[in-house]
Image (cartoon, rainbow, N blue to C red):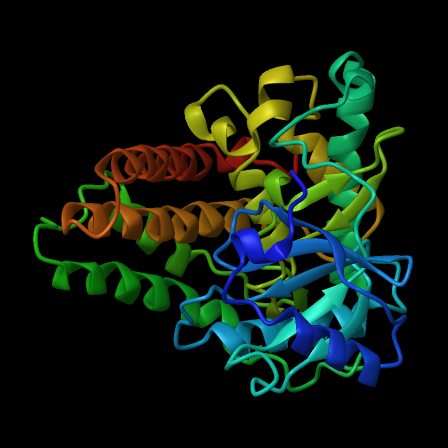
Amino acid sequence: MRMHYGEFMPDMDFSAIAEWMNEQGLPDGPIVEVEPLKGGTQNLMYRFRRGGEAYVFRRPPMHLRAKSNEVLRREMRVLGALESTPVPAPRLIAGCADDSILGGAVFYLMEPIDGFNPATMLPALHAGDPAIRHQMGLNAATGIAALGAVDYEAAGLTDFGKPDGFLERQVGRWMSELESYNALDGYAGPQIPGLEKVAAWLEANRPADWQPGIMHGDCHLANLMFAYDGPALAAIVDWEMCTIGDPLLDLGWLLATWPGSDAIGVLAGSISLAGGLPSPAELVAHYAEHSDRDLSAIDWYAVLACFKLGIVLEGTHARACAGKAPVATGDFLHSLALGLFGRAQKLIGDTHVGLHH
């Protein structure tokens, strides 16, 4: 529903945004047709028009967290770096890294994506044709492979992350995160079958060699947008977790969250219910066709993704136990965490018929 921005965004200073846009040499005129865009993050997005052009505006939440502005600065930097690459990503129009313009928040403008999120809806064309949905899945793997192929140093992102020791840090980093939840009153500690087994397996089977690259960090179907007229991947969105790490973890993340016979498919919403998607093995094979990375340890990356995302989701369960999040949400995410650890244990037990075979 389109409204005057003052009706639903009384704390936003659109006059300051308009003045800043003038300074960037962008088309002048009133800001009109403002509408909120729903997303799966705490950050706020609004679409509007000005001077005959359409924009998507993105800023941190109204109540800033400690790293809110830094996250947005990193997003705008990586989107700018990806502009001249084949990676399907939103095109950055202009970014404001100065938090004094908008009352303490940084922000940026990007081009609207002509596409849809398959987790929230499927157009009739896609809903009615399993061949299109199958190709959508393969195109997701192609897009992730394109990101992993970018030379991050040539793209100006040499100092964007800390790739040295990235894989070695993962298990300890996330076990510490899980341990930190114990400080929440009312949380009895993680009741996650297989936790220690999965952690030990990851440490014992960590790949010795890997190639650093740009990582999206939260690669699943709900963070992809597809074209309305076919299976093309329109954009990978929500870059707030991006860093320089091991891009194979993005493929592992896609595999960890891929719709299957268990409850994890709920993360993919509409397209999961429709079915017709390629198998995990097909995703890996398709990625391999578009990448020169060694996929012999892809099971390990899928297990790490299950482990990491499971611990992230358990955090909301812990906060719910402490009265800091809705109980129903906490219970639901705890069930998904258990499902992810279940997937991890199946992969550990079936490595002889793993995803790369």
